[in-house]
Structure formats: C-alpha cells, structure tokens
Amino acid sequence: MSEPALLLKKVTKKFRTVTAVRDLSLEIMPGEIYGLIGPNGSGKTTTIKTIAGLYRQTKGTIEVNGLDVIRHPTRSKRGLGYIPDDPQAYDRLSGREFLEFVGQIFGMERGRRDERVAMLLDRYGLKDVAEGAFGQYSRGNRQKISILAALLHEPKLLLIDEPMIGLDPQSARITKEMLREFASAGGAILLSTHTLAVAEELCGRLGILKEGQLIEEGTVAELGRRANVGHGSLEDYYLALTA
Image (cartoon, rainbow, N blue to C red; front, side):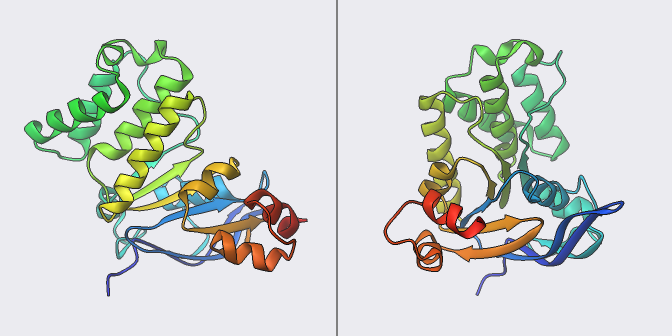
C-alpha cells in the first residue's frame, strides 16, 4: 500500500491570540483530488500556506510524501507545487524566463526543463505572451504562468488556492484537464476554493472547514446524506452543514 502524499496530524496554527487552524488531521493519497471548502476566515489559505512552508505550524505534524516538513524542509518542498490565490513573480522577467528560473531552483536538467516549458506554454497557447514582462500580464495570464510553474518540475503533490480566479472559460477547461491528468498519473492535489461547482466537478473527497476546524469530510454523496436535505447540489449540502 502506498504512503499518503500528504498527511496532517492534529495541526494547529495560531497567530498571537487568534487560532486560524485547530487540530486539523487530513490524509490525501496519490491520485486523489481533495477539495477544501469553507466560509471566509475558516482557515483554508492558512492551511495551504502552512503545508507549503510559508507558515510554521504551532503544533502537530505535516508530512509531504513521507517527509516531515519541519525536519526535512528542502526535500519535502521538492515534491510539491504551490499555486497561490494571488500569483506573484518578478515583474521584469518574461513568463518564459520565470519558468526557466523556477526550473533552475528545482535543479531540473536543462533539456528536460526546456522541453517542459515549451509543452506547458503550448497547453494555454502562451508561446508569444510568455516573451513579455510578467508585470504587464493580465490577471488571467499571471494565473496561467503560476499554474505552469507549479507543474513544471513534475511534483507529486499540488497545493492550489482558488485555481480558476481570472481564467476565461476555455482556460478554466484546460486547467481542469491538466489537473485531472496530473491526478491520473499518480499526483495528489489539495484544492481550496469558494467555487463549489469546481469542487464538485473535480474532487473525489471534500473537507469542510469552519472556524479552523474540520467539521465534515467525505464524497459529495456522503456529504449529501449527512446534510439530510434530500437530492441537491454540493452548494445545498454545504449551506446545510455550515449553517
């Protein structure tokens, strides 16, 4: 049996007197797309940033591909890709230069890096756009480059905070295809979103956070049974369970 791509054991994150995440335990296996949903301020972004190493948990254990993120910070980060809710890069670099830079950081062999950059840019039709400065990009194109940067080094785990913000319908469809392909190839995804239709379409399991705690977890069908509202959508179940 394979080990979890992501394992959280009773993770708590405090900011002075505020507890953003409380005793959170999660397990995501290779090949799985797991959705994290919840109201504003429920701890979704804090959870993802803590896993990514941008915050350090106050207590609890986080393992990425079997590696403790505190004991093995560099090795654990090599196995993950992170797509933030607000994509950032060096504004004076072109999109292509930024992707090449990311590849160098992850120690990719140049031939493989250039092959991956060309292939990924082609998925979105960004070959020409990628020659311009990142700082001049639209919100949607910044998001696309951020997604490609996270996929570039072929990680085993993707952390995604609101993946579809700024994307036009065609780009959103391409993004969903790439995420499904990633999972089908054995990658694991933790996806945080307020767009419940996206979560329902992509995710095999979902966790609902409220005030930093995991209050429900399961498939859409399982959440529906617990919500006890009859036949409905994930939105119906979510509203009933978080009321």
